[in-house]
Length: 275
Image (cartoon, rainbow, N blue to C red):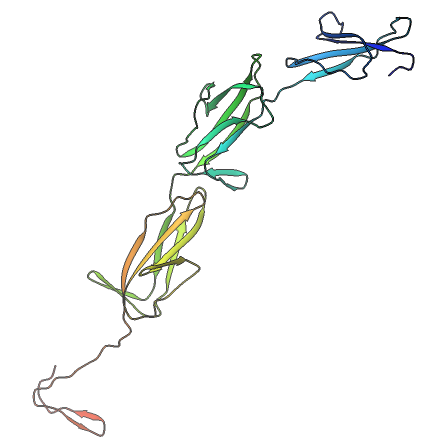
């Protein structure tokens, strides 16, 4: 703003010598300029004042204007991710959809490269198989300019957890497993990718979350089921074991050939065969 000025002369050029002027305003009384749409690149501008006699003063110091278009693109996921130590984990059913962000309407086409593949036009959601994968993506505007390349990396976890049951004080006879009411049952689950999220078990029909060693105090036959899930929703197959809780002590019966005699709480056996 110059006190004696009644108007201004504004120039915007591609070069600092102002030989390639792309936008010019002469005689504007406004102290602000709204430029037209510009392509991505580096520009130079200056302004000079015009007084009441129409004389133009020297130009101001040259300044630089950088036009950048990031052309922001968002990766939309069909399922939530699990993140651990800065690493994202996803299930194999997760779909990755690219779409321009709400603030950017200049994108006319998106391009994507998965892992080591070349860039291709993006048309449909992306699915991953087991392992670590990277999506590289960029936008293209109506002037033919590409935006910056962005990346999104995730680990597709297609492996369910492993789970096993441990128990002490048991006897296996043929197809039956007999346990004591104080027999301790414990579950151990492991997952080498996204990690174990939850372990469940059931005694007969009712499922509940495993929180430590348990026993079966009720005598009789029971079925124990157990299952684990990882942090992206993969579930192990249900493990199952049938056990019989035996809390009845064994009885001993003595049979004799000639009968027996009880005296003062003692059993007297005559000479003879017994079994």
